[in-house]
Length: 396
Image 1 (tube, rainbow, N blue to C red):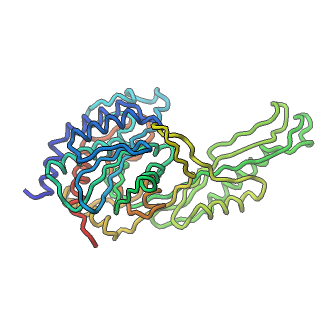
Image 2 (tube, one colour; image 1 turned 135 degrees about the vertical axis):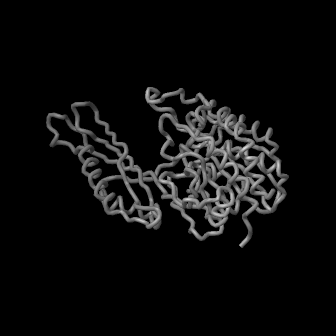
Image 3 (spheres, rainbow, N blue to C red; image 1 turned 120 degrees about the vertical axis):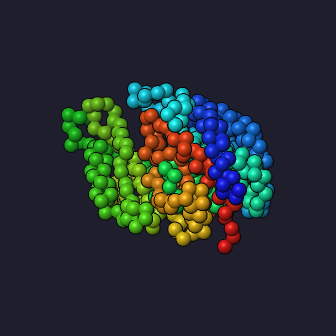
């Protein structure tokens, strides 16, 4: 039996094991900054699976290693989740982890604990096969991505000196092979006014009016942003507006709005800020905010909320290896595509220039949505893909 056949057989053999592990993970709530309990559980599962090394870094990321070769592949899953939202929209308890009708149910099954469970199984498969290839395969279970995508990997690269030659991101791709996504940034716009009594508004300067007129300019800006053939169009949207005044019968002396800016290929922080300044003039103070929140370990690692765009070309060796991997395992052609949302690739590839590919269980339309669930078939296939990839990747 060839290596590919052995991996397919083992991934199927471990079907129930993978589903059960995901069920146990889902039962542990793990909001950003509160991942300690689920990291402890994941470390236990990696140890039981026979990983060669299991450790937690200074931020709180879990790093499991299989193999000891001189080259490094990283396979990444963030293990924090968003909150549940309106519980009345769920048909089951969000943290039930129920295994039913060929799926595992619950918050995080798609985004993206399903990837984490498949990674553990892939590590177990590699150990079963006594993997001794040229790679050290690092399985990274990363924190705080939902709050600040890429922060965890900036820490791994800049503080832990981990620099793989390729990273596989296990965010949901519906088992497609992904090679990029738009970047994003957050922009704050602050408007000052002069308060006066509401009975004589002409005596003051209303900050709400200034912000309102500016927000319409942002709407116009969105219509003329550029597009990329692969990643699509950049966008900008006002997603929050607030104001203050001395009382409800006084003109507002302060207003603020928040912009969600999605960046296509060729757009940068500098170009996006210049466009906003050109659109709304000098009437506002404009800035990119800083993410400043301690991890569950109490570590503060600040980061500007700018998340660079990234993509790799379809003829890149890492995509070609992914295609070969998919063909060998599933006797079919993979769908090559991109994410609509943002991932840790903004740091790994966007900032640090390390190539990334994406392959993950589950459909991204269920990310952050009620009734989140992942097919067990997807978990099995993802496990096989992650296990086979190190065997197929060669040097240029």
